[in-house]
Image 1 (tube, rainbow, N blue to C red):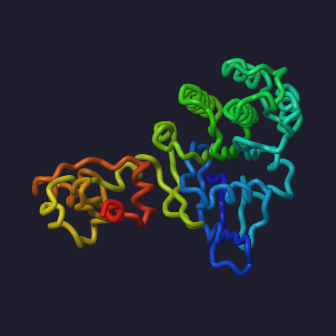
Image 2 (cartoon, rainbow, N blue to C red; image 1 turned 90 degrees about the vertical axis):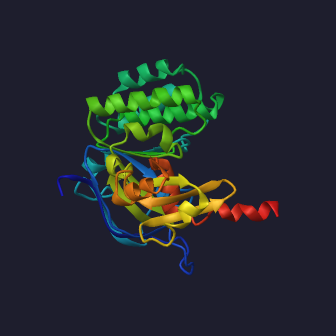
Length: 303
């Protein structure tokens, strides 16, 4: 248990009793301590529900969740070591940034007020400003800064960078990685910008329709799939193979997606057959493993 920050057992959430859809469906996962983990999935996949249950904001329909070896709702010592933050929190628009920082300072024993103030200055935000006078991007920055400054052992960031421009997002990634290295803890971040932040992640969880598709370290994810491009007849020769996840022979080109790395036996066989082999980036791995749409589905639009 000591090596895990979060442990779930058959964690289930169903918002409507008679609905056939689960927000979370018997999720069993043990998230390692002191890792920077990406929680990846489309809208409605269960990311926010997972965070809110782990933070004690929601009660699961079934199953259990253990945070740092205990119950986050019934143990103040654990409660102080868990932070859940997102781009918009109900703190009141009329409140000043200075007051928000003070509130965090009171609530979290490891909150580094000086660090938070330095970060706000770095991002060009005055403590005297009120939240209602800030853009969505700057509001997101305020919540990100405060959450990071808690130095909580379990830090959950739910789509924290909405509205933030690319320059400040990159700055935020750098700050988060450096602070994680200085103060190791479990940081779990959900985002639609996996391509941007994959280099700072150590592990990744992919969720789809309330289910965990996989939980792996990033090196493993980078070797999950490969792409083989070539002529239609070359691709067709590999269709139907168990190791072929999907294939396309439409107007946008002919290729297939194979299971395994670009150095796998299937990839080498395809290369000998004249196809061009490339690794599939983690962001595209998520798409191929969860999407039912094929490029050929687009053809009806031009007929």
